Length: 389
Ligand code: GLA
Image 1 (cartoon, rainbow, N blue to C red):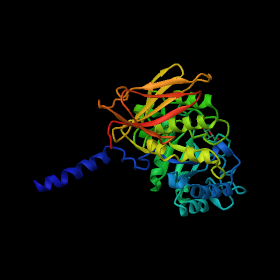
Image 2 (tube, rainbow, N blue to C red):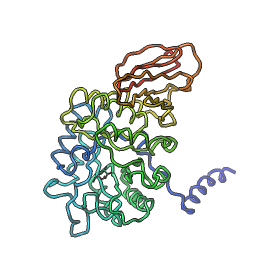
Image 3 (cartoon, helix red, strand yellow):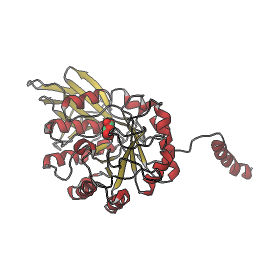
Image 4 (tube, rainbow, N blue to C red):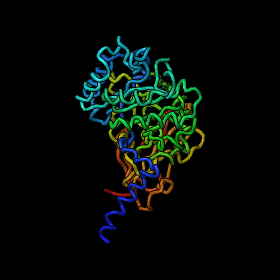
């Protein structure tokens, strides 16, 4: 009997391998990844000095201590040609000391390094990419100490997406190095249905964001209905943050950051973090808003209702409270009054509810409804709780 008890689990394990069950995905992104990416602000104007200075700024600005970890180099880090062995190599002028030196540098600061390639023959900027070179390229990334790979979709020869992304996920796994795999196929093939299973930890749900209200809200609309696909180690990615890039107002950046946090989006800053104004720092490092992003209450935040320009977005928090965003989407000068009741939030029936405004830090008690009067493109973000503690 005892022998049976010992051998049964072993038998089941062996059977799983024999019948081709994929080994469980390593847990590398229990919470949405946080970091920075070079693309939005710098495009191809990147070099190792920028990456080093950015890593320095993660520390000096307080971003690292606020939870930002990944220093991600996007397109244009690679040389125009592969080397004599057929391997990817860094651009010799812009990255003369190579990627390993950079990963050593960022690791010494308690940070992690990300690079970029495409599941195509070339990157979107026409540089060598990884389709049909998955094993060799993954080995290089691992050898260089890379911790995160953003994997794009340009020049894909119209081959189906899931196998192209699976090939790289498998290649990364084979290296034995924990590397977060970030799938960037722009939401073209409903990646929320397959990206986690092929080995992705996050997947872009849309095309690229731009630094304006229309773009941000257009992407926001595309998140509706995707909340059911999000879980730990499998996050919807509505693209990186434009906060601090200069073309939206501070109020618009607050709405953008709060909404991305409520959606459990990866918080990947896309600005120049070496030169942030105090207001931008306060947005990107708002501990309460970051805590909403990093909290997994079992469900990503979602749109509760919209009424013309008034929208209510909510997220169940793991302690039973609710994160709430009241949003005035419209552009008219006339302020709107937006309200939500504790019943709509799904909170238990009690006589009073505790409310914290996550931007002003003001706390108050409400009984019947939470209401804010908001001017154009303004939002208010709260935690509402039925507990009085
Ligand atoms: C695509 C991606 C962007 C960026 C660029 C780089 O457009 O969606 O996020 O990586 O390529 O060329």
